[in-house]
Every structure is written in structure tokens, then in C-alpha cells.
Image (cartoon, rainbow, N blue to C red; front, side, top):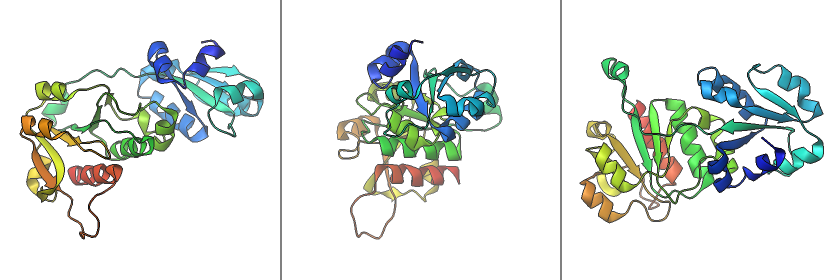
Length: 252
């Protein structure tokens, strides 16, 4: 890929058009290398490095293509004030709906589905992805009009978890009705998530940071409400915190 095209990957429309996104920094590149051992599509990664990272990059997996760039070129590729000197151009993953495999069903392994409706904050989304990767067996469905998970801020906040969590983008509320039969969501008046019933749903709905999940959708789904018990001193939790607590409950 030409450097002029790589620069364009900071914009969502070009990521979608060209089929790649950017990952910057030592930690994320090391996580990328680990993920590539289990996910062959990641072998199509190209590393752009300055002179001071040539030797470091040479020690990575040989299936990564390494391209040398000048410090000036690196500054143009990076969206940080002080570029580290190493950026990866990573193929976007396939993000198609997948049914639970027969093998998973036979072993009783259940992949939980988390749905985010119009989430806007990159830090929230990155943190959620990081938590779901930590616990494992989660699939993340994201609606249209949400922040792009391949936005550089989300990628950094995920700390490499972006390579490990199955994602599906632009999933509408109508799509959910065709795929799942029972839904749970959070509401101050709901039952406690400590209830055993909380663990028995196909899909868990979480809404926009300010507006939540549209009420009409919840009514159409006949979704069940649950709550995270608190002291009552404040009236809401940060979205990422709420998802994280629920993920812990579902994994315990």
C-alpha cells in the first residue's frame, strides 16, 4: 500500500474502503504478533518502522512485512504528538454474524452476546473490548451511529484486546430480533444481576451513554430489566463500568 493511502486510514471511510486500520506502539504490536499466531488473516500485516526500530521489528514474526520510513514520514503516518516509530497496517477482520459451532455446543461453551446501541465515547468502547477479551467467550455487536472500534483512540484504549474479541458492526435493533429470542438490559427498577436468571439470556443490551436503549425497542423485544445494586448516592454508572460488572457476573 502506498504511504499516501496509509495516511488516509485515520479516516473511517478510507478504513472501510481500503480494508485496513492502523495500530501504533510497541505494546500493541506485540499483542498483534501474539494474535497472528491464532488468526491467519493477521499475517497480512505491514509494519512501518523508523531506523531505531529496524532491529526490534526484525525479531518479530517473519510473516509481517517490514517497510522502512523516515522520521518525517512516520510523523505523517502517526496521529500522536510524539510517534514511537512503529506503526502496523492491519487487515480489518471479517465481521459477519456467526452461529455457535456444533463443537462449542457439544462442549457446553456459550458465547455471550453484548449489544451496544450508539455508543459514542472511544474510551468507553476500548475499555469494554478490553474487559470482554479478559473474560473471553464474548461477541460484541455494535449498532450504526456508534464510534468506530478501529478508530485509533479505541484501539489504544483496548490495549490490544481489539485483536481478540469477535466484532459485528452496523447491527440494527431489527437484526437482533431475527437472531435472538430473549434479551436483558439494565434499569434502576430491575431485578438484581446477582439473580441466577440474569445469566440465561441470548443478548444483553446496553445503550448510548446519555439516552440508553430506545424504550420502544425494549417494549418490542419484551426485554427483562436488571440492575446493579448500589448505595443510591448517584443515579447512574459509567457505561463501560456497567458492562464490565455485568461481564464479570456472566463469567463467574
